[in-house]
Image 1 (tube, one colour):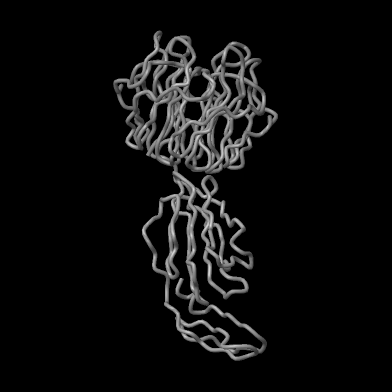
Image 2 (cartoon, rainbow, N blue to C red):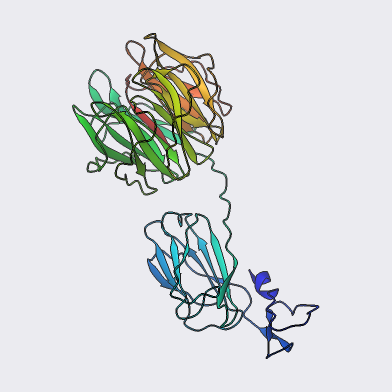
Amino acid sequence: MSGIIGSRLNVRGSGLVSKLGTDGQVLTSTGAGTQLAFEDVAGGVSWQAVETGSTMTAVAGNGYPIDTTSNACTITLPASASNGDQIVFTDYARNWGTNAITIDSNGLKYQGDDDTYDVEYTTDGQSVNIVYSGSTKGWIPIEDDTVTDAPSKGNTEGIFGFGNTGSRVSTTNLVSNAGVVSSDVTGVGTARSGLVATQYGGDKGIFGFGNDGSRVSTTNLVSNAGVVASDQAATTGTVRQDLAACSFGEDKGIFGFGYTGSATAVTNLVSNAGVVATDTTGVGTARWYPAATEYGGDKGIFGFGDPGYLSMTNLVTNAGVVGTDVTGVGTARVTLGACGYGYDKGIFGFGYDATASVVSMTNLVSNVGVVATDTTGVGTARRVNQACEYDGDKGIFGFGNTGSYVGMSNLVSNAGVVSSDVAAVGTARADLAACSFN
């Protein structure tokens, strides 16, 4: 940042300047016309601790990482300023798109406008570098760029949980970063089936909805150590079962579609703090027993489902907006699983087709959300299985029903290749859920 200050040219009046001052100086006018002089200013920016409050007062010469995960932030600029004063703000948690920053110029102008105007910055990952230019234009941004996020490396571990063994259970099984499924962990939360799970917060997970004897909207958070929490109070979303879920925006999730007594397309977003939102009106064909996976690093896709054995898909943007139906590719089927692989791609696999047969074919999803034609199945054909990623760039399908409950798994390489069966570990069951965590 000191290079920016040291080379800042502030010319008032006419004439040409052939060189800049030394580092730590700015060129300013000493009066009308072409009288110019170099003035010393403080070199560099002094970075402060991360600011998490809903209000703050900025001081010239400082840089502020602003974390708006929990709330928006109103920033009051200094009441007086000198030419060359500089302040920098940066989106610490890449969350300004959800909770913006608002700049109060505190009696001074901001880019020529007086402080009756609201100045908001609302883009995730943005950094704003402002310099005071004098009373005519006041504070002016010299940079307001969005910093590209580092590529997502995916989560390293996973968890299968809940399901039906002939009776509903809340048992879980962790998946290591080598794709090894652990023995049963005693269940926490209400035993149920027909639920789903998704990651959130970049490193945690959430189980939600399902049937415990009746349809529910109960959720259970999963820590970044794979520990399942007790039931959260029922969400404000529509109670349902046989839905699907996936992550989007790198740190958020979405529950969508399902069965309420009839098919629905309603969705519920999950914040990066694991809070489930109220219903969003459904887009796309209402259905139950679809599957969903992330793709492209920050987007998602719902696909397949019932009634009528469907194969259409619906893309989810990195803001959690569900798109209209995309014509289906691959064998129409229900009760399948899906997960991410290769950091930015996805895979649908297994299920139950219109001939009333369990199947094992898979369909790859490209990093732009295009679903491929069928890949010949590997592993035991089955339905009401589930899948999650592991080791950052690989996946695993597990459990299901072949006509009886099973517990085998099939690993997915970082190229989307499904392996043969791995012997069952844990209680054989179906109609369960799975997600990754870190």
